[in-house]
Structure formats: structure tokens, C-alpha cells
Length: 328
Image (cartoon, rainbow, N blue to C red; front, side):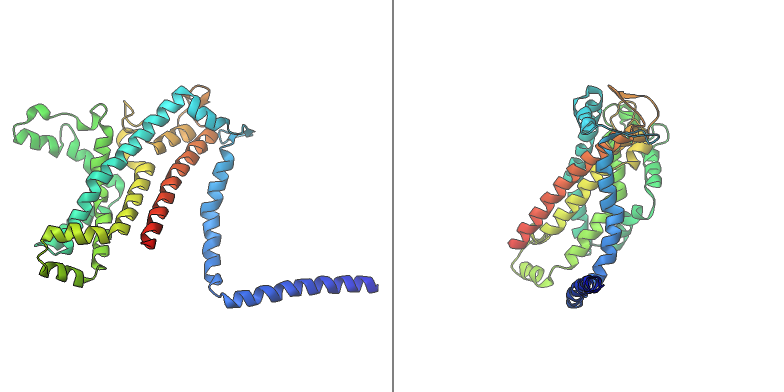
């Protein structure tokens, strides 16, 4: 009896010791109560889906019935099956094309417009409202308006070509073979150019006015102040926008799906990684290449995992660049 009491007391003392050790630490770090709720939600809605997708990619499953563990066979199939790999490569190439167009055309335009509005050119409030207006409407409406612009019969673009005497250029711009991603780019650029423009305007407002005044007194021109003061000081903001643009370019879905359907157009010129994933995981029944058929949840999550890794690598590069900026 005495030994039982001794054992119970020792367990109680051990638990009390742990509690007495934890509570002072919590009192010294009260911010932990603000972190825990967010960490729980992050684990439920981010970490858990990622881990579940990684596990599911190791199984053969169509979403119904029993699943069969196949290890890394889905990954091997994706990169060795000619039918699957050709679709993957075409979709990835289109994603990269969209990112390159956004990087070299949209980003400079956003910086240019932000600087003009920040310096309060005549009518800047009107231009700011017009450019940012597409942010208040859904992408579905933006795409519909884009189709009205490029439609062969009622499109404004073809009408303008006719007015200036370029009737030979009139065509169905939404169906030009091999040029589908350029149409996606034009419509998505019009719909999203205002977001990062406002981001740059906010970043420019944070810059000290004394620097601009000193540069003006030293004789720096309007564009000289832009290239030699604004751009170097906005380096971190520009990197952030590049990453946002990259993530958008790699995960775009609605523009390509509504303009080209589940196959990304008749010639697959609008096919992207998200469409490829959707087609494999939830598409209509049919062969996708080799032994893989549509409605393959296992292969679909494999594609999603590959997309995640590609995006993660670029995010890590961003962190490296930002850390170097902090050291300098």
C-alpha cells in the first residue's frame, strides 16, 4: 500500500514539475497565445492538405473504392510516359511563357504607371480609377469583356483594324493556332495590372521626400529620379511583385479554362499546369497517355505536388534575395 502511494506521489510530483516548468515559460512569452490559434488554423488548412496530397500521390486511386499503394510509380509514369510527359511539358511551357510576358511587359508598365500617378500628373485620379477598375469585377466578367474585344464578328479590335485600312489583319483572334497564351496574357494583364500598380504606389509613398528634393536641386531629371532613386529603393517591392506574378502565372486556371475549355483550346495552346491537373484528376473518362486514364486522383495529386515543388523553389530563391538585401 505504501509503495502504491509512493508511486502515485512520484507521478504527481513529476507532472507538477513539468507544469511548473512550462507555466513560467508561457508567462515570460505571453505572445504564444496569439501564435497558437493561427498555427492551428495554418496546420489544418495548409500543412495537412500538403501532407495528405504527398501521401495520396503514392497511391493509385480514382477517388472511389480501394486505393493501391504504388510508391513513386506515379512520378515515374509522369516523366517517362510519352503521352503524359508531352502534355506536362506543353502546359509547363505555357506557364513559363505567361510569366515571361508578365515579367517583361506588365511589370515595367505597372512601375511606369505607378510613378506617373505618384508624381500626380494631370488627371492622375481618373487614370488610377480606370486602371484599377477591373479589380472590382470577377475574372469571369473580365474574360467575357475580353472575348467581346477580340471576337471575329463583333470585336472592337477587328473593327479598329478595319477603320485604319488593315482589313487583311481581321481574323478570329481567339482561335489563332499556337497564339492562345498571348490572348490569355492580354486579357489577364488588363484584369490584373492595377493590383501591383497600387502596391508600387504605396511603396513609393513610403520613400522619404527629402531624397527627391535633394535630387531635384542637384538637377536630376524626372526620369533620372525614377531610374536612379525609385527603382533601387523599390528593389524589395519589385522582388515581391515578381514572386506574386510567378505564382499567378504558374497557378492560373480560370482564364485558360473559360477561353479554351478543359483541353486548353483545340490545339492545346492555352493548356497550363492547373488545366492538366484538372483534366487528369477530374476530367471526363478517357486515355491520358499510356496506362493512365482520366479521373486518376493519385496521378492528379502527383501533378499538384510537382507544381508545389516548382513554386516552392522560386519562393526559397525569393527569401534568399530578400535576406541578402537585409545584409546589405
